[in-house]
Length: 499
Image 1 (cartoon, one colour):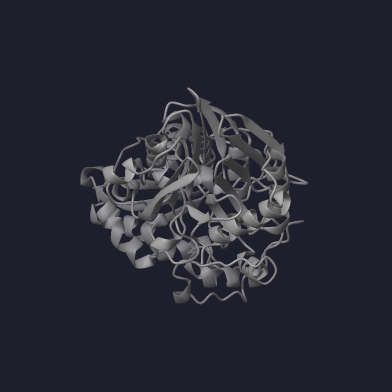
Image 2 (tube, rainbow, N blue to C red):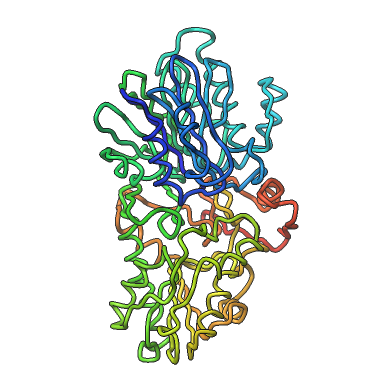
């Protein structure tokens, strides 16, 4: 999961891209990068760190031009500690192309071999984004064959890219002297939208990145669709996939996206309210409301669900944790020890809200269980009589291969465990999970055009239809920290997509 943005404008774009990346910072905290173009020359700056730390005044002054790209990086594959894997990536032929990518290619290893042996292209990092860039560059070169570039050439190239690569991908590429190309995988797993204002067009991961910089959200880019914005600002678009189908990642609505975004026609905030409503029914069936004194959210993504749940159950809603906003989101911090250490740095309790009470803590999801265990203990240390824990999402039982850092079953607290076993590990008095069908209905009801989601981390059904246990084991070898994790796939039984 990363945040990406691309802009074509009649004015300099460096500040606009910087501001958009700040609005997408929640999608990646490992590295940030911006590239701009002026007179067919690219100007790039990228490095590890948060947006505000990577870009200084001197860096911004050097980013010249009226079109450009930006990315905030959250690593799932490759070397998380390498500056060279920060995006954008650049290749000089054909034309000169820079690219930013949100997602994960599930066949990157095979493509590397193919690029070297057949396409005669060299890959210099472990990043699947560099693989994707070279596949795109090769297909554009094949299509144009030295002739002037036309929008239709790009659409033909993207059509061929769709046939070669597998996995999830939302892509924005800047082509020297021509404009910005964007496209989305045929399942629409990762989000991408566009809008404009005052002579500029912006493409970004979330609508909040458009509206926050004073632009109007126009529409989502459809699954399989390619959009090209030339340097005069004219927009060209074409469907480039044979059988596109909208199956967005449901975890975007549960946790990843900002609540003030609208993605694929669904308000993220309303989706989380709906999750709270269905979760309330699950709570009633497990813990009688009269045994709960107060509902407390675990900041921040769970707040809408917790508030809705409390209202429906007629219980007080209180803020029991204060979050240190200068510590990043623990879920997307690389390394288990870093995540564990940061929990108490990130959260502090308001003891008066816990002392002598039976508290119902509400979280958006439970992935590794490390944070949940620490938070339950913090509640007990603050004097809570009983600590119940409710998750607005179902148990995360399966690896994710589409760009979220939860790929190994060994790291998932719910994998091959019953709810009672998970409860015992976390240490709460009762554990209530959302149901998979309830989650899908709660979110899917907000847009009838969506007939399904990628919910693979919950139900084990991979929408691309090409993932096996062996694939997951191979992908784990290239994940961040993958050399420290030995995945046992012998017990990883994936459901049949037809079931």
